[in-house]
Length: 599
Image 1 (tube, helix red, strand yellow):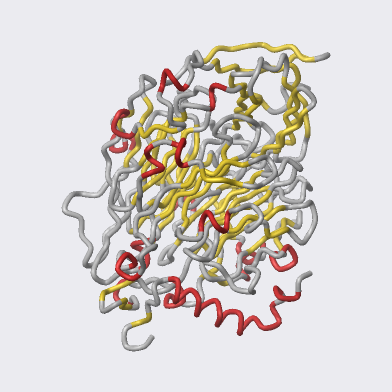
Image 2 (cartoon, helix red, strand yellow; image 1 turned 90 degrees about the horizontal axis):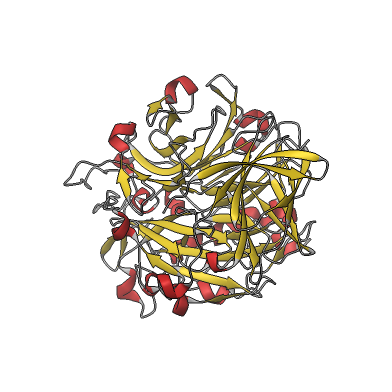
């Protein structure tokens, strides 16, 4: 292993990392020096078995000429989304004002159409909203319009300072529940299956009082069929004692080290009765102090158990390997993903995992601060991973930007995982200090050549990619059920942006909606190997990813151009480790596959 990443001089590395973080935060030092579709049932026949499937038939596929030449169209106004975000921006420049903007795609009413939850920020002592703050829950009406039903659903009220949202069906009743992170409390909403939610935080035991919780993810770490909850925590937060920093004689946000060394992860085990037990110490995740911003759960070593990549802000990243006995071990140093090539901890923000080079192993992307370069780590199936940031082109493409939400997606359904990133600086004063630095920044749509090399296709991506935003959370999902991946992202102090994909449905695809029976209902942790015409594509249903956000749990697999494949086969390894194969599936439609139905 590369000796430059050994922790033997951890104090020195920490000092260097802190120095660079102060620089990247504009040298801020503490003052004084310091459309929907109908569903129909289908009984599909496999070789020697009957397979219970639900096929969701997609709409008639139209070409780009019918819907606009750009790949993505901003349809936010068109669909009726008018809600606006507020982040409590104040002269005091509390860092928490920059680290929020959560949202989610979810089908909260189980009607087969993706809805959108938009999480409001909060107020600070000197950052008050002129209008009452509320979250929004936009119900997809299926006619190209959305309607905000948050008040009727009981999820409109803002408690504390909300930051992120995690969606998961923790009680396996078929309806998604919501966990909202924040300061000084977090909130768990149980879906009542009638269009409403109930706050069950205290009964569940997951309030996390007094702590700055940035992000959370649902995953089943012990394979008992119940979703557990990992909570990322950032650092010490106190509005009355928040550090004050200046930049060119203007109030500015302090660099992360001003908020201490960070906090420790929380892991809540699902007891199966609506309550959770804090197993942070027992599992070993509590050992690692640092400023955690996001995480993704995926089986990175193909042993059938979910592991964790945790991105941290100016603290060494974590790669927590599941030991299959309820504990985790951090092997980020062995994998060469803890620090950058200079032994420095990046300002790790958003994170996602997918197979970018077609070798069947999950690779990782992590966004970071400007001039740090967002990271791309290739997983060869063993340690160490390969830092592919420069060879992939990601270094040059992302150097000017402060990246937040990120997600792999096959936007054109060619079978190759592309990448989207949204960005935005934290200090408005940056525009006064450099000709190249901007506060609002453009989103990036990066096309993958199939070998993990990316190029920016902003010219054809659509007008939204020519504009700039102060963006944060990003989620992906097929809100119009046409077989391609749409995108929504949050913007601080502004409306969200909903982008409809106009291109993907022109190629062939197959969609999967997995339903666990022995495994968790959402099938978070499942691995899919799709085979057609001699080609194999590997996909996963991850826990978490991006930042402050949750995406559609359905999986769309692009099958490329030309005549539709006559059949598609899929091998599924369910989260509990059991494997089954479903054969002879039709393309260009969704299939709901129930665990064990093919046996």
